Image 1 (cartoon, rainbow, N blue to C red):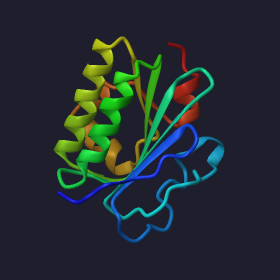
Image 2: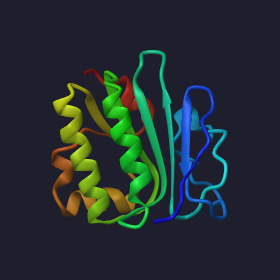
Image 3: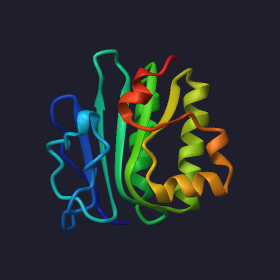
Image 4: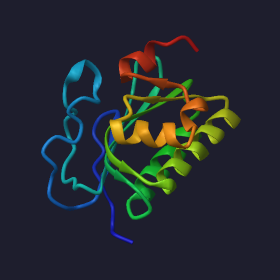
Length: 157
């Protein structure tokens, strides 16, 4: 298993595979269209970033490939976030280029863990490839899907 790099900044953490940076892994996924700062090295594998809102909602932004090879940083981060019991957990999927069945399974498991912990769970801005996977598997019927992080945060609980 490749080693992880974690570079926490104020009110956020970043986990990424130490490879060459993609051109724009978070281009459309952050609120107000601004790219997050403090990402450090990230590769086409998977970059994970978290932040919290003033209302204690947690946002986990993923970028790259969410598959069996890159799953662990996302799993660890999502498990930690559910364990913090925020009132709302949003997973931003705008930067996910590829998601296999293990990535989908992680999202389904996180949804169930969040429900058990009384944490509202939402998916935001799934890329076209992720949206297609959700539709083909009918998983789009079990997730609360939103067109953007801002929309997911603003939706009534």
